[in-house]
Image 1: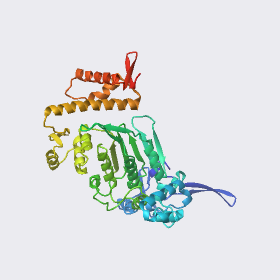
Image 2: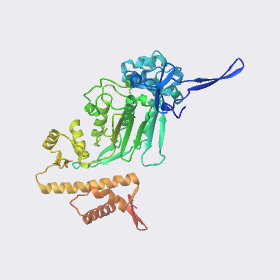
Image 3: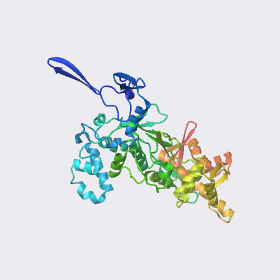
Image 4: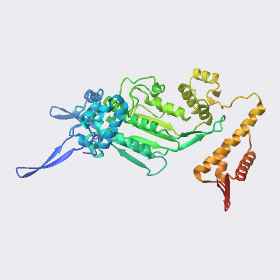
Length: 464
């Protein structure tokens, strides 16, 4: 039965009874999921009188339409009680509720769990809902709901490196976040001796992305939420296309959603501060990337059945990142347009005209690129002298910071580190001479030292 029915459905339970001294087996047949016709070997059937016939299309559409206006997340879970919810998850939900409703903070501590869950609209009149199981349920209570209830994290390009997380999602999303490799990066602006420092990923953005997947998932598909970690980006996948508008509608934070696929779930998540229901989630992610000088999130891989968010964690075009670092007053709309330019995406003629006027882009359509940001100085000799001195300081700071981070570097690793930050006016021989001079000067000053192992020169901080 399991091999030939929709979603591998089969008997829910088999009971062994004794009736009048005789052994009786009782098979409990589960109800078909609402709005999903049950098929046998891919064919749908109906009864006409005493005959078994093919299910006609009108009846098929009637069954499918049952879920159009039905909120799966609001459904009551028969047989589940508050004992099936995780105590630590309930405690964290209380903390989130108090942050969202600070005026009720004094009252919340006096509420019983039953009262709190009703107030937070996680349960209904004390009855457990699908939402309650997803957000707060113990892992062993997952069998109560008709959903797989899993988030899968996988490290790309690594065989057998990944982990499956289940409910309660209020707790396990943080566990998923901690699996993701996150570390600081530095950018060296042309108009400052001090580097700009930031984290590869914003923890709040990771949680925002995960919580959006949970809130907007199409639970009728019984699909997992997927998180793929690549070397320089994260990918988040959930079933179901955008339910109200497109992601571009929410970038500026001006649009408020008119409807939600899982209204009850979304409201509960807002009440315990997992998401907001004002449409600011996507806006916050874009602002965070802008403020950390990184490429914008995109949803280019999405389609009508799946939402796919790609979150970059590295610099694509240094000119773009330095422009944001050195010009913090650039508005979000302009930053998004420049991001499209650096990614080679088309923008409107009106946008091109505006960016040219601000001297932010160069090139001819469709081969546009972000302008290099060089401060104008009247005296070209002074300008050259400043840039020459700044380049030396930049290389020095980059090398010393890298030695501090890694304890030691080989000569070849130092060459690889500094090569691209040296002026493109220099040929290969001049670049090597500049690196050799830098190492010699820092060694003479006692800031670094080296030792030779075989044919390899190894450099470290301090005197040898």
